[in-house]
Length: 251
Image (cartoon, rainbow, N blue to C red):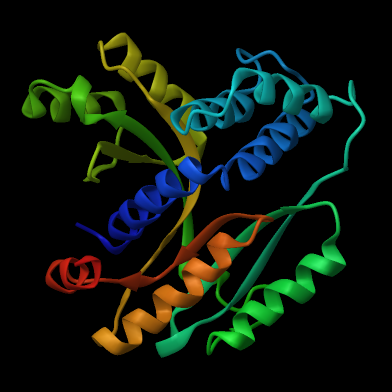
């Protein structure tokens, strides 16, 4: 399993724990508001980003009332803060590269807080572009394992539909595609009888870094601190964790 999938699995488990405490609901609502605003529509057929944001929100049981309010705020139908997207780049313990996507209504406050998180956790916030070249943008199509009865058949249909690669997480299969072909591959999968959970466009490291257990623990500390910050939407890293080490860290 790749470094991307391992970190995705860790983050997914953590997100479910956060959702139980209600810590995730604010982030999900902001994602929906921004998707509605940037897409200029509450129509899920014509606003793929909004459809994806709502699918993710429902996965973590965000109430329907919260979803509807978030859409209205994004479309300007309700009073609320004006959010914007910003990406921060930097280095963590062991020299790992870190990309941080945030959604904020106060970029000055957020910039200061993100810089503080980096400095408190043995990291360094860098200039724009300092690590972006280490990542590539890819479309990801998520399919629930519970809906796949025959993996070989699923794999063949996925390849025929245009998927470049398939990675496995604890609960899902993630199909990697070129961003420009995301909707085409998604529609092909549906035509082939494969139910798509949701899609996304994310950053994947071109190469990964393995660290010692001690350095990995430090790296996960800064990654988790960033991910815990309310304005942070996504954290991407080129850290790779060996299976044995991951089991040891989770025990």
